[in-house]
Amino acid sequence: MNIETPPSEKPYEKPEGERRGLIIVNTGDGKGKSTAAFGLAFRATGRGKAVKVYQFMKVPTARFGEHRLAEQVGLPIVGLGDGFSWKSKDLEHSAQLARDGWETAKADILSGEQFLVVLDEVTYPLIYGWLPLQDVLDTLQARPKHVHVCLTGRRCPQEIIDLADTVTEMKLIKHAFQAGVPAQRGIED
Image 1 (cartoon, helix red, strand yellow):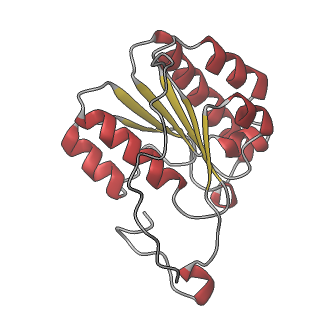
Image 2 (tube, helix red, strand yellow):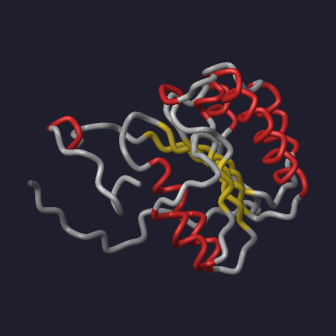
Image 3 (tube, rainbow, N blue to C red):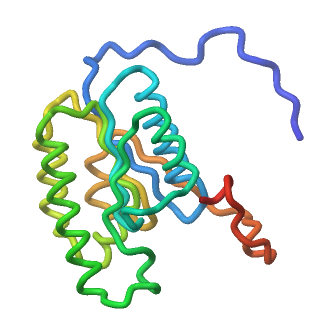
């Protein structure tokens, strides 16, 4: 490890541009994409902002840790899917759930009533061909200028990355699962 001297001067200048809604992408093979998006959602909720989370792969009855906390603070989370694709009994039904869910999320984005809309795991229905990429791009571009949208999932289409304001790629370096440690409640749920 290298020891560094803390900076004595601010390493950047304050931007002069206008505040506006951002398109934020959390992608990559590492852990933390949804976790970061929920951090944004809880931060905005804590500031009294209107936030809605759409989970494209989670079932509507999911009760993970984030759902339990969201209930306590009044953050709406909408499960749109029927679970991971390898658990699906009918992929066409899964695709239709994604399409129906997208129409609901799209309406929320375009309504301007939300400060932040999280599209959790939306990249999967996109890369599976269940959602039309152009419709998603058009919606992101047509959203009211104050609406922030955060998209998560692996293998985010380059067209969305190009449109986004902030893109973070979570890089897998090491994961406990690879060493045979199963997912643990409160850490990976």
